[in-house]
Structures are given as structure tokens and as C-alpha cells.
Image (cartoon, rainbow, N blue to C red; front, side, top):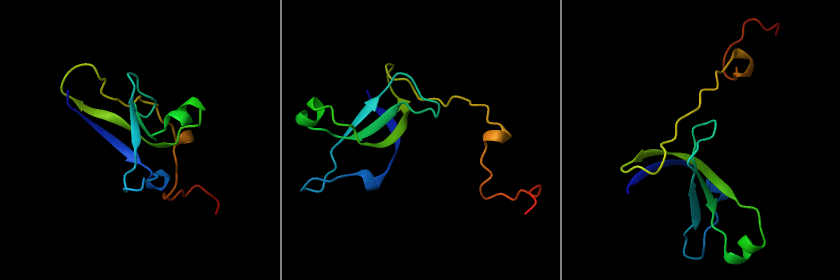
Length: 99
């Protein structure tokens, strides 16, 4: 199977080993969230961290963009029906404001 997965990763959350590599773990889910993402990337944990139930350090989210065989669901964004009430006005002029 071959696949393409697009990710956005926060580089300030990465930690590197003595050889300069960042060991990460990627998860794929069969269902997508409200942003159409069905993949996540965390910093890898060692056995002791997993057994101690330490919190995972999430460094990014993404979605499956292509799959050659069946078995992985391609992420699709769920339409939220954005209204003017929950839409950002940052960077736009709003002439109806008194200031």
C-alpha cells in the first residue's frame, strides 16, 4: 500500500536525540474530525513513559490525501455551515462599528 498524508507540525514542540533526529509516532483513524483530519503525530514515548501513562505531546494533525489500495479512509472536511456569528472579522473593515 502507498499513501500520501499531509501534516502541519509545530516545530517548537519537537525534541531531537543526540543524532539530530526527532522520533515521532503517527496515528491514522478511520473517522475524521470536524476539520477533516484523520491523522495525528506525537513525540514517541519509551516503554516507561507509556506504562506510567504520561501525557502524549501532540505535535501535529493531518489527513490522508491519497491511498492506492482500500483500507484507509481519505479525510473529508465536515461542513460546519459557518455563519456570520462564528466567522472571524480579523483583518477586515467593519463600517457598521461606531469607532
